[in-house]
Length: 261
Image (cartoon, rainbow, N blue to C red; front, side, top):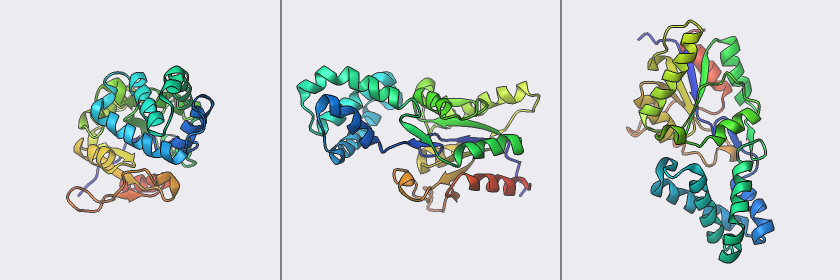
């Protein structure tokens, strides 16, 4: 079987290209402390997970806006960790503003060491376009720029702005369509889904979503603490093994092998 060469590699953002500089519950604890006193980080961690999952179900795709969505997550996290309700009501606007700002920049995130070099290599050494498709709000775009990701990492397609989220194949199709605007401007023929590879750490949202859109896919299973939160069981819904890489440098080699470079 002849494989078409990969011309576009799309990446998930969180836990693929970037990761919280400190665990989320630690950063929440730091911001809560001046307003609410010291809350147990373990309680914050458990409470955050409950709040986040509940809001994913109650308000999918940030359907009331990311500011409102995250305000509710933060409020529920603090209350679930034992915060005084009266103190929280008085300080919630300041806490929300601080956390929203922190997680829009390098204050809250760091790039994985292999992320920017991989994107540079794909584009400058292999002439392959790169893009981001993420279930996130626009702060991810701001964080990527603040962390020094190249301006030609485009498009950056985000679920809040699109009103849809992975694993919907439509968000992947929109990403390819926008990448083709860049490709067309440079005089290239349109990129087809079968010429695209998506890399991410979630088996459903990233791996299955990309395959459903007609793309190739790699499941990123980083070892160690940075990969702990990924939904990365490397088995498809049909029970067959997923195509797995443990770092982004391996993506370069996969593309080289696929393209016969």
